[in-house]
Every structure is written in structure tokens, then in C-alpha cells.
Image (cartoon, rainbow, N blue to C red; front, side, top):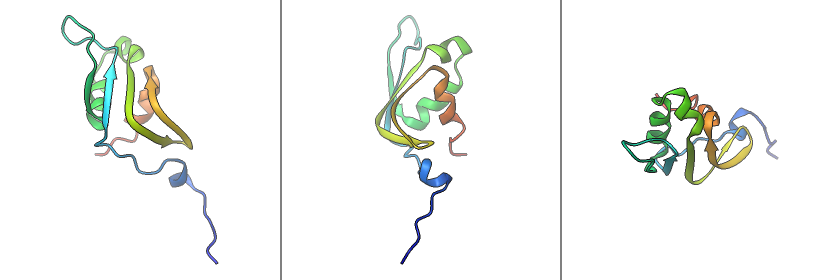
Length: 89
């Protein structure tokens, strides 16, 4: 019989950084146009924004990820910072 284990890895399984993601509510030139890119690219782009635009941003994922035991498809404002901490090197 195998004993189940519950640890940090079960609350946040590996993130598929190559899935599509849309970074919205940030200025791109004279317009606010959503950028569709990889999740990794979107999180890195969010990290480069000034604090006011980081707070206004919305990140929508192609499919849900599990972060700290919660399944999410959308991150808003500074909650995107939780993903910055998980970015691959």
C-alpha cells in the first residue's frame, strides 16, 4: 500500500509557462490592446510595467493553473506578482 503525501508540490504543481495568456488593461502606444503571448512572456511583460499599470493589469490564462491549492484562470493587479516568484530562471 502506498501512503499519500501532501506537500508544497501538491498545492502548486508545475506551471505550463508556454500556454497562451492575455495581458490586458495596459497601454500599448496610444491604445489599450490586449497582448496574447505565452504565460511566461506575459508575466515578464507585467514585471516591466510601472506600479500604476501593474495594479490595473489583468492576466487571463488559456487554462487554469493551481497556485497554493487554488485553481485560477485570471489574475488581476498585484496578484500577478505571485506568478513572478514562480518564473523559471
